[in-house]
Length: 440
Image: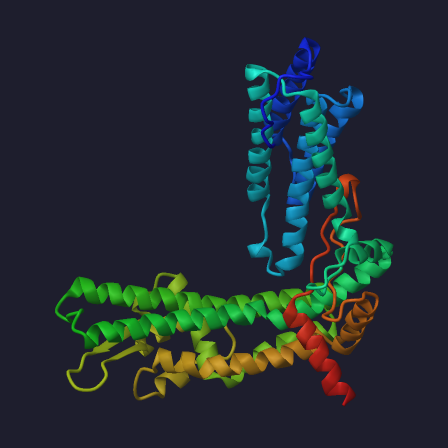
């Protein structure tokens, strides 16, 4: 709220002071009520706060012009601006992690309302401003409110997204259309993100980083092989990274099979085909099947399943290696139920196999496997691309919109519009690339 200039004419009377005190109390109650609002996103939060204030105004509207009405308008302006800020952040920030969250909006709105409250209490302590100043200030606030409300109807030449058109057209989508668009988009996004495979890649990079860091410490003589505590710590770090990597492999298998069963059915041909792909990889890849049993041995506390080679060199690069102890694994193997594991293949080896070599060999095999899994898990890519193209065609945005409703509501009072999240650029790029590749 802006400060008024000093004046001596047209001051509100004592009745205005008493009315202002009533609305100051109501504003205090609103600020306190913010902490009690049970909302799961910024838009619900702002809407609930607006409803609280709106109910108080409708039940007992103050006269205009008056300082009490100015307080009412300033609070409405604060609510409208906060909702608009959250909405614009939703459009301009495809990554959900970078958007305004509920806590940030809560804090910002609380700060705005506190500013209104402080100004109100200053008037009560120092005297009410002149009536002409109240009228002028009220007109300014009303104009600002109109700007916020009507901003979604004005096009911006520097922006490819006309929010007003977007809201209007998104609100015309039926629930069936919205569900069809949303499901097609979610399938394409999930296929592209490959989160389970990416988790394996992340853990592979982490393991590689740990090994390289230890090799670097050996090279720089920051670690002495005579320091048993130091070498124990190196072994622990490698073992921890190995557990994470092998666990990522198991999660990838378990979750992919579980998802296939959920989508296609437990006894479906698709679910069985997914299981068969993992079984085939286990049969054909020594590294994949023994990394699985190595994970199980670690989980059972068999820290002797591996032993570690640290080779510092003054000239040339220092080396770090991890070897699977065949004798320890031969003792452990009969206790497992993993198919394809035989004591003979370990017994036939002349040396303990390198676990790091196994990891290196498995990584590209998993990537190739993912392509085969995607062909089963996402059999209707062409149809989903066509659905997204259809959706884009319903909007006047050349970059593709951006208009999947996450809620039934469209535009509330005072422009409190709710979000229609933008399509991720990677999904739009895939749709465009797929169309060009298959229509050329």
